[in-house]
Length: 627
Image 1 (cartoon, rainbow, N blue to C red):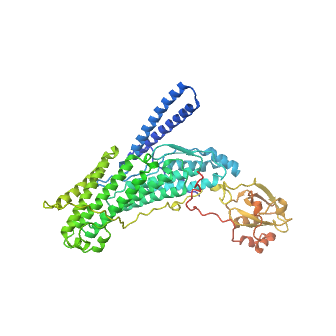
Image 2 (spheres, helix red, strand yellow):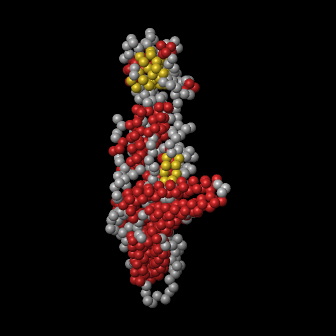
């Protein structure tokens, strides 16, 4: 029996949490954008069609209003997409905010009539008898529109995605569409898109899987080790979902699912993982240890490196006007902030190391270029030389802190984020304080230029692809029969009802396989041949009992139990199966069954029609190009 589908519910859309209010506002703006875009399309068509000057002027004025409204709506949506604080944790400890993604919104979808009609036309079954299954599928889709921000929400999206595999196999033939449109809004701009291809639905659900992981990652308490590990796992899984989507989905109708956008999102998630790895090191390592400080400096340099790459990606011409300005600014701020931290930790490693520093080996590949001045050995043995180099590193750190604060001040949305302001200010004051501490009045030397720190990490981020098999689902439309035969891609001739009487040589046919059982051979001149049964027919019913899912032995037993009145069999023939009649020779023991319907047939274990596993491998959205 099929397990209750909605054991997993979506969030209550009316529960007024801060996050749900945000989603409501996002949905409202999306609807307004949709309306304005329809008005713009109509006005543009009229502008092109009319030759009347006065009408053209009126329409041009109307277009300027519509475009102005659209711009304001998109700016409002950008501000919502930058509401990072909504997704952060409630801990009082200070952590640098992370960038989460809002979920893609979708319209309700009524599949009752299209699926019912397809069942009647394609499968020859009464469509109304499957209304319960259709409604269950629609309820699952409705629930996945508002997943909760936890493991249950992720499982709900996975469950729906896995059901789409069965929906695709059952109702989407390669040469025809179902005639329904899947409507989704761009996650960042709210621009609506729609397609008939199920690939768009699958891709959008995968996108939301990644987006939900970003929200889960952003809400973790990163001041504790368990919280950091959960954040790392969530951002790695988000990167995996976006990467899987990029590799398996092409010709996306919305910008958020374009290859360029997904590349940017994967890199952003990797950078956020790297930031968490740095934070993890600060928790695990004793910061008064020379070696640990060198490692922290290199970890910070690595974080700066990956955020610089994200900033470059966001600054590309096709991305620059699309990505929210607050995101680009945040990434640039973090790049400068972590560069400053790398120089700060280098400075305290050099200045606070008592006496001689024996770790010459650790220092060999620490700088990108060797610092000016004495040799490495002299530097490590002489506290004064270390102080000079440390001072140069602090000078660079202070410059980078100030640059981070300057860039932060350019963005109105980021200026409202007290947490970020506090983190930047604290780091800046800490570097200034250290500089004052090591600065001597009698220093007459000019502080040199400190070389950059070589980026290095002890935990490389991993892109974790979605594990679709972790959420088991049962085909909702199981009653239609085994997918190996009863699928949208197969066609069959109308079912034939045949009445068979047992003759001297039995029924005159051999059987093979399971679910459904196949007629493997028909004896010329026998009862089966005279009744019109053919090699390659599938038995779908015996004496009124549905046999689509019946095992070989079950069908044999039904046939054996018939009396003198004979047996009614319903069979179907797959279109195109006529050319497959050249099957392998019937084993001798099967042929012996013809006379006695004996144990020989029941003992046949083999089936030439194996069923697919319960869950397919991650569906490659067969769609590279089919969208």
